[in-house]
Length: 300
Image 1 (cartoon, rainbow, N blue to C red):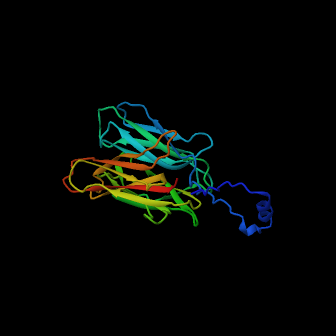
Image 2 (image 1 turned 30 degrees about the vertical axis):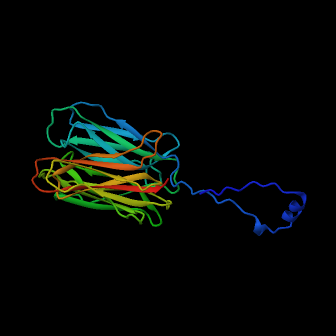
Image 3 (image 1 turned 90 degrees about the vertical axis):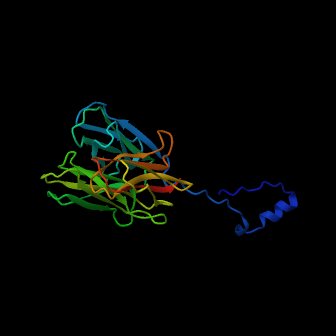
């Protein structure tokens, strides 16, 4: 909190005494806490709405801003489409500035639908880069791969890409590490085949990483566990923090549930502070399952 200096008037004698004081007696106002990610906003773009099998769209940060996190939303498909790619641009020495979302129908679907991409953007962040790691490529039912930030950096946001399955696999785990008192430094992507396929495929995890940020933590929230068709859960940053990125996890469904919504709040002039995860069963599933929403949060 900024300290306020009280203004006083001094007489001539007092002024002479004041000039004789040492520098150690001078009171200096405390500096306010610095925002970890100044200029934070959420940018949105949506694909065409139709009954095509494939939809894609790219959300790009405003000029002068960089991408700290990602999100998406499937509109109108309610479990009948899956996001195959949530791909930030950038690289190991280049700050990301945009995210591309690609989605396929999981089964033939006659209805019209679309996909929305969300980009969480901020003024330039020191040391911001995008790193990636790719799993083995084969026809196994399950993939797991972790992208870890370079030494000395922390995780602000996440992304993934499924290669070779075009709607036949779903991301079950999209989990940043860290905790309520620990900054995340990596993201794990776990994916299952939604239906049996003989295709060879692999998964790529993307980590958006930066130099350490004030107050960075990972918050989580769990939905109810039951056999209902839909789950919705929101993870909210603690007071005084803002959302730089997010993740999710589906437990108990092993490829039978699709995360339809991975939606940060906020807007073009408003910093996001929470992330909502919504998941549907892709096929009828009798077992109990639940969803977890993860929020990566830093000092506002």
